Length: 490
Image (cartoon, rainbow, N blue to C red):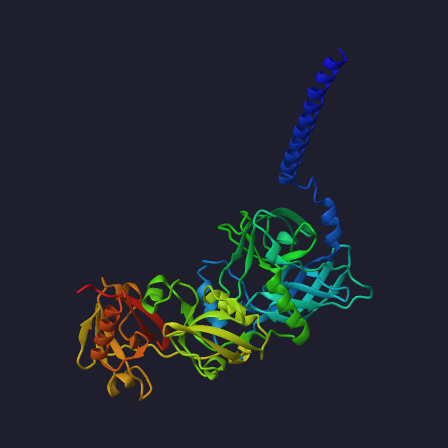
């Protein structure tokens, strides 16, 4: 009996261990599932913690009232034209336009105990008076430290008797699509309000050069502009700036400027009262697949240099036709990213820029200038030639070499060379890619052109090299760009 009992005990022990292991595995799976589905039961504690740093902003502006003083008549009245003529007469007795006060509402948030406040530039633009209303009561008048219209950010300052509650910026690059976020502000002038949602998308671009928006479905309405977008740690990951809406109200598509863009702007505004962005000094365009094929690039990436005016890049030896593939050790996927990289780099810094040129790579050392000092260049005037000598048709375009008469019509330098486009077949690829009469083709296959015979030679060279297209450098209204045209089969 003892032997039998011992034999029976061993299976029972093994079975118990197996059951315990199975229960442990089930518990781990359940815990993971619960963690994956975890969501805050309430945002109340977080909202209570960060609300004191959020402010309402009221601005006042003096504007001219075009109506002026005088009698008011109903719209459509027979006397309306008479009174309009009387009002518009330029005599000395005519009443001067009246002044009236306009007001606007927005939001903002305190970023330091000594009273620095961040908001949108459009909230305070042209304001004569800026009043800050605090969550816990009280109002203070603010002064403008600096603004940056390019990112729509403004930095304000108030003087308070006691240290102010404030919030800190977080790392917007860690925000993932699907993460919870909270928007706070003054929607439609209703006072302090909280809304919650998720990050709907990242890296959205609206219209600005330096745009990097977080898209969220947290309710954002007029008056929320300038308010903060918080993560679940109470850090500011965005500044609520815009909404996409057919009716002016929230439909769940709001945009907040990413904090990693805002912090750089705020730091410069706080230190200098203005922005100081790096400047490379090139005109660029994206590398399309046909352009990449025409140049012998393996992938369609980088920024294609179309022109190098006097500036840092020219001083470093950069040339039109170079493709910038790396800037300061970071790969360049496209023109938008290059502009951001350059703008975020310190003025005066010497950086390594890798370019693709003549089938290989070359590293240039460029000392960056300041964009704000370089902006304001002019472009050429629009002009279309009436005629040009020796016109010939090639690749759907009627072309003629530049002569003194055409240079004068196009307001080009006396030493300008190239082929003038006199006409473009509207069913041709050239027309589809934007070629128009008045354009000047200055290069083909990244070599200068002076005659149609040279263009025909470049086309033949490209065919012999196995190219499917040829790259043309074209100036349209004075602005250069590259166009890749498919080579027809002979």
